Length: 413
Ligand SMILES: *Cc1c(COP(=O)(O)O)cnc(C)c1O
Image 1 (cartoon, helix red, strand yellow):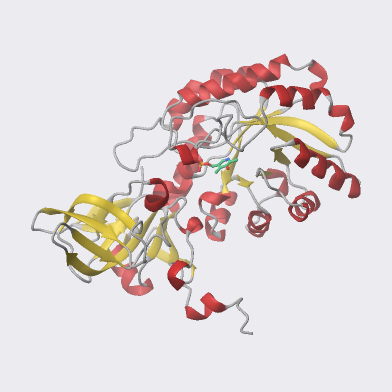
Image 2 (cartoon, rainbow, N blue to C red):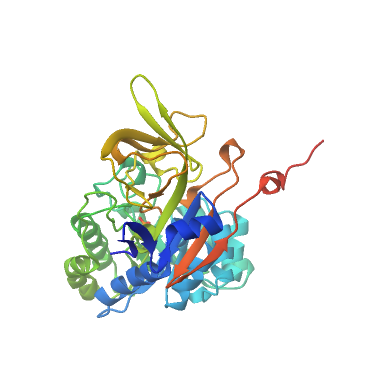
């Protein structure tokens, strides 16, 4: 599961007492367990070892260089969605032939950088994009590999903001158009249409939507003429994790469900898990600034806000709240809120929580994915520090921003 465990009433990350980490690094603080991070990667790799897929960790879930490097050293490839992520991916030491690139809005500059960087392939989301990549490939005198991102029009059974495989979503190419493009492939001489890609959404807890989509895409592949020369099937990411009482498929259950059809397809399989790998490998530690009672409610006001972790505000997402030191005195209903001037600035709503006092620290659990990577400087708040724990040692992997960082690129005229 994960390496955030309670010993003698105190919360630890692996061998590190989090109260001690906080006294050294301050709050708000993202804490990652290296063991959990690599453990989840290896669990997935192991569950699919029969077909030895290329597992491209989805950089946007948590793009800290130390996290990327850790996974790359374990053999991961990377799934990127921007030029900035390509920059990070290469900087982390990822071999370019293990990088795949999706996004509906790749710019010329981004395409050029990825062509020059010799990534494995682009996951192409539209015909105009294909044409741009074709032109740029010609300019570089190269034949560039692409996979068509198929929009299989399946229900992912997750939050509507993180559903990406419905035909009303902006992502991918519908089956009819994909078939037409593949028929016309001779037109794109600088492109090698070598794969099919899908990514139907995020935090999907059941195997069924994946299977439905894979069946659709694999069926589509079978309908193509043999000389279409498709070699890769990229099944995307989206595996759900436990935030609260979810009961998501394990890596093993997932592989049991989809392995037969993947094996039968004969394609080299690629996966792009993000949340599954880092979601429960990280927490956000925050300190209570005030406890405020109004006629109707109790608010625990902490020093982390929606700028640090936007998932509750954005998706109504649930994160467990845990004290760093177990507390007596029973539970009381409260909201955990940040200091930001928005009513949407909450981390937890109407929860039965320990009676936190001013100065106490609490952990917002399962904050490793889409936590820091979605953070901002809203309200001119310097972004949090990040540390990685390995055994009994914690190391800083991103220093806390200071006020000077806030205005670094601003020009007074
Ligand atoms: C975001 C994204 C992923 C990763 O999604 P998770 O739900 O974090 O596993 C994979 N592939 C693509 C194309 C994405 O956009």
